[in-house]
Image (cartoon, rainbow, N blue to C red; front, side, top):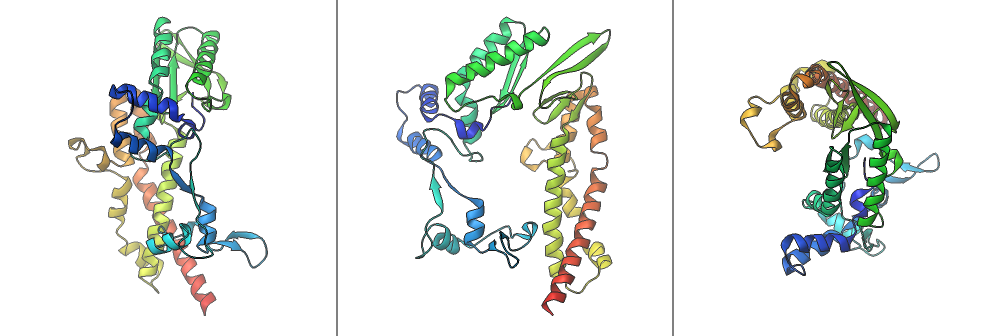
Length: 341
């Protein structure tokens, strides 16, 4: 199960009560209270409004509104700090502030340093009740942030009852918390001798196996989820596109062979590929997707062997994507040069 819009639905009163209880106090100390106010009254700026204000989005020559330059060519830094203060924060006349402060009694930002911690402690009482429910039935309960996994013995009926129990129970922990049917699925495993057989029962995902936290289990083997791989490949594409555009701009007039031959491919690959002696470094911040996948395969043991196959073309794929983006960047540069002339 997956809680829909979890971070945006966290009730401030419930969060504060849990926070106080874990500290063993009746009210938050001043330093904690400052953090609580900051994380619950967070500020956001609408993406399209920012693009419009900075001149990247607006009326197009042929009518209508849209991006005035290809979205994939947007600069990583949209504006200077001075421009941000003047045009986004309302520092200049005629530029009202675009900053919106959360005034709802619920919601925290996703991505703040403390957000994941708060998301996990917030449902600590829900966790206890769910753990007790599954334990009484000889099962297991797991949750990480908004991702929930419930394992119970039985069949289709027991699965549906367990799902309904969780869906109804979570309503007690915030009026905005919802586990939607499209965010849930029920799968079943049975055994036939030494074989464990997977069967999809119902839901919007999991038709090829139990999916949880980036992995898929078909009863016998563990795989990296297709959606996890797709997100990773998109990340490679975006990074290759930015690097290729910058490299082509650095060497105007050079042909594709020169660009491919002189680009530091190895440094680029190391952003995503194999890191030597990664097992010697417990600091996960030095890992790449390759090290994450390899470590996962080792943890799962024999069941994780398919993961090795999923990433075996990893290095070649990065090379191909980089060469492709260099060629596209060169064509764009030539077109822009011709148009300017």
